Image 1 (tube, protein in one colour):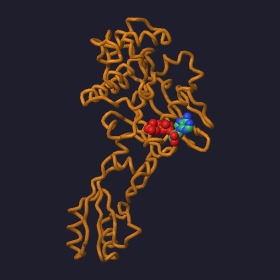
Image 2: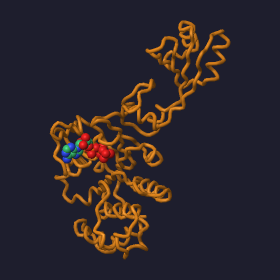
Image 3: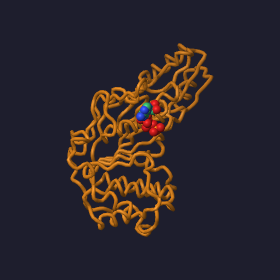
Image 4: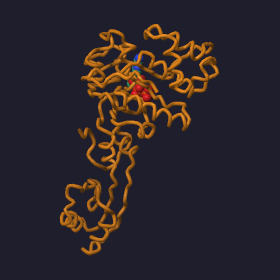
Length: 320
Ligand SMILES: Nc1ncnc2c1ncn2[C@@H]1O[C@H](COP(=O)(O)OP(=O)(O)OP(=O)(O)O)[C@@H](O)[C@H]1O
């Protein structure tokens, strides 16, 4: 893979500060602030229409913010001297001239990036399109187009990569390749921001997550911190609400207990084993009507954070 890695410096930090963008009555981005660190792969997540593309477009100088700003290494896109050397972006499914070959496509962009033919060929090899260099893009699969789009973003050897749904159209082998490739680029010190509306798609690739919903920040943390929100919990229901409360207190679970306001005698206990609750209830002679473990997956946490699943759970929001 490529050897021309930029050093991991603060220059690759993406900073979004109180960014707001309205389109007429639509608040596409609403006072959004977050940072993205170099040397890591960050998932930029949110449901359709959450404002991801608008944020990326502001970062790329394609959309003027209504308020706030978005910078790369402290500079707005317009302030970057040679943008293609700083940031490579693949937004939406890139459009390719069907009659051009893969090599021909890269040659069109090479002058802007200030690179020659050798770099174009090197990149085609890097993304696994070496053997298809002279084939016309019109006959390429979606996966091959994604690889070509990725090669295009890398032309100027940028330290920052903004990729919108790069896994779209890739088969499982292609997805595995993409994961390894993005991890490699981050290991070189690059900043890699990957947008997706499905957490599971990027779960095995990302170090950090920035989750937005309705234009606002819903959560920012490392992936392990997000995973902690997905710890299993157990719903316990007893006809003896006072007895259940006493048992929770005696066991020292008060800070792990979440009452169901809609149902007295119902409690969700986090980070406690169902068998242990059952045993203690049995010893205390407490009648239970429900003891249901809930294995909350990461996707559930994601849906809860973006407000698409209403489930009693742990405190939502930023864990940083
Ligand atoms: N040029 C525009 N004019 C009017 N409304 C727009 C424009 N661009 C985006 N919007 C609106 O802003 C909101 C956010 O859209 P955006 O494309 O940024 O979301 P997204 O998170 O990228 O969604 P998706 O995953 O579907 O691409 C949506 O309601 C969208 O309809």
